[in-house]
Image (cartoon, rainbow over all chains, first blue to last red; front, side, top):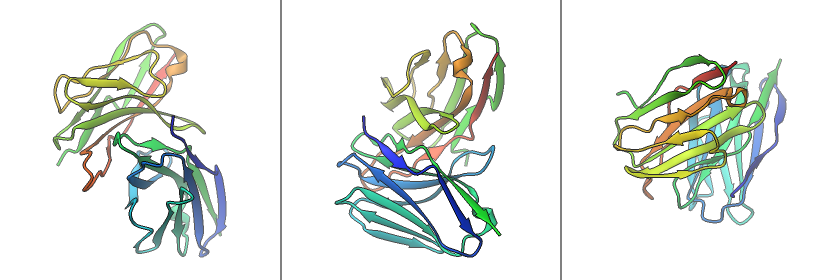
Length: 110
Length: 114
């Protein structure tokens, strides 16, 4: 099946930028998503990007897509302790059913 | 503005019992899916449906059954619960169009099998 890969952990200092990376294998991916999950909670959609775009910015969040390398990244500017969570990358191809990565735990320390 | 409604939120089952997790959406979405989430494993697809009357298996379908008799409802049945099915379950729906495919999730169902 198609795979979505993410590193499992990222630790940053409060105020720094965080960059969470994701790679995927489905060349027919149409939409790519970033979700945030806080402990004991469900999944919150942060942002998504259509495959014909290479960048999308939304306040502190910047998504970069390199379609040639099948690489997606999420940059969080001025990271705060409230950003500590698990971040999931997901993609949908022709089936429109999302495939998720294992999630990256972002730890923000003072 | 209900979105995706999942019930129950918490359930404890004994090994061998059966139960159904309910999922309903009121957005007329064609695409619905069930995932389980386990620590360090992300969300793994159990079953999915691309429209009423159509279902298919995902990555981890064993021990689960689904049906899609209406567009709105997509229940997940555990036929004979096992401790390995202790997990958090999420239902999702999406419109599945090239002009937009925002995925909506239910709030999750925490299931413990003892």
